[in-house]
Each structure stands twice: as C-alpha cells, then as structure tokens.
Image (cartoon, rainbow, N blue to C red):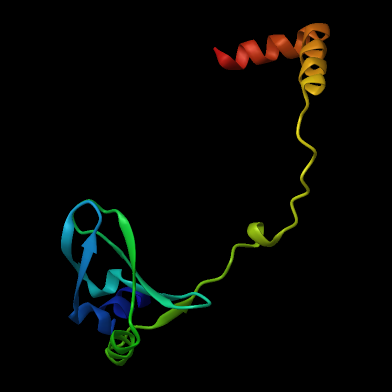
Amino acid sequence: MGDVNARKQDPRRRYKIWASCDDCGDVVVAGELCSLIRTSSHVTLAYPCGSCGRRSVTSVPDAELEALVAKGFSVEHATTPRELCEPHPIAPPWTWDDLLSAHELLDRTPLIVALVQKSGS
C-alpha cells in the first residue's frame, strides 16, 4: 500500500519528457519512467521508448539538470558492478599443440564424446 502512495506522490508524474529513440524518432516519455544517472564525468537521462520499449540514454546539459532536479527528479549514482572490478587471470592463448592434445584427449575418452553428443541433440 505504501508503494502505491509513493507513486501517487512522485513529483515526476506531472511531467512529460521529450526525447529521441534511435528507432522511432522523437517520443514523449512519462517523467516517472525516466532516471537521471551520474557517472564519474556526466549525467545521463535513461528512459524507455513509449512505442518500442527500447531503453535509451542521452546526456543532460547542466542547465537542464538543474531544472529537472528543481522539479523533483533525483540523480542516482551509477556504480560499477563488482564483476568488472574482480581480477580475471588470463591464461596464455592456445597453441596448435594444445588443440591437438585436446582432440587426442577426446579420442581417448569415449565418455566425454558421448556426453557432448548427447547434449547437442
């Protein structure tokens, strides 16, 4: 019930945002569907196209950002997913000898070949 009241009181509901979809051209998007997202260097407006549903983003100049914040829009800070910050050790690339060894292993191990053939069908 609190979620319904929060949506009714969302100040963004009063506004329509004119934006551009790469597929549909100029579109009008309900304000409550838009998000302001700050990255390290700038703020973007993220919105779904009302026609095709494709999510798009566009840069927001400082003057427009101030106006949107004054109208009740809040700026969310984008965070980098932890998966992108984790170390990912990189093994050396396969050589032709490695590929040949893998094929020889498959030939010597009929169980693996049976499992691969079974999963492919």
